[in-house]
Image 1 (tube, rainbow over the protein chains, first blue to last red):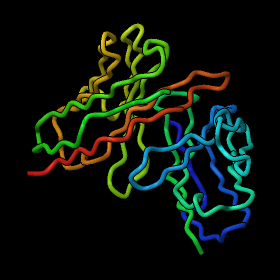
Image 2 (tube, chains in turn green, orange):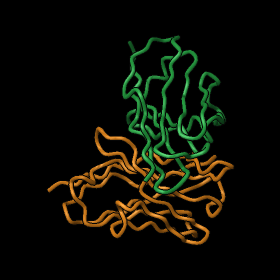
Image 3 (tube, rainbow over the protein chains, first blue to last red):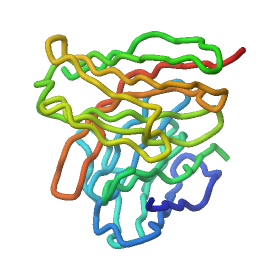
Image 4 (cartoon, rainbow over the protein chains, first blue to last red):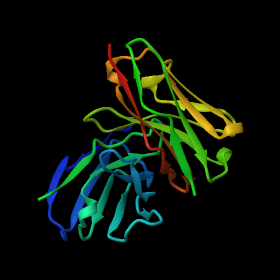
Length: 107
Length: 121
């Protein structure tokens, strides 16, 4: 199985801040990397697919980059609705593993 | 509009089985894989397996092999996930998610609302 490691595991930030979350794959996965936002009691929401493609309807404050083993999710200006847990996921090979999550909290 | 509507919460005893349904609407059901993902309390997301509704072909995470079965009924655009020999570790919210195949793998663009399965004696 491909292990996905996110950092940090939790993060405190303020509205308007720029935030970056990193995700490292245990082996090269090309650009087979997705990012999801998950809020309590809700279904996960796709933000970024193929490492850097913005899902339709997702604000342009979200962006993704990377290839190979190292990836980042950046939120350029935090909004109140962005406080949630974020997961990366590799779909290079099954099982399609997720990172452990990064909980973004209000400072 | 695309919708995935799952069945309601379940409470099961250890050793029992549970079958969760996911009814799709708003798109061609046989055109997309359906995946199952779960989240145990306080834990992260865990991929369980997938089905190709067109062929019925399945693929499961090794962790669940022999214990999970995913099936579809294309006549009613519904996917089912059955998990057997339940233990307390299977207490979780179970999600179905539609898989879109792109240039760089699959991504899950629509999700069901989740089904809480509680395993308790």
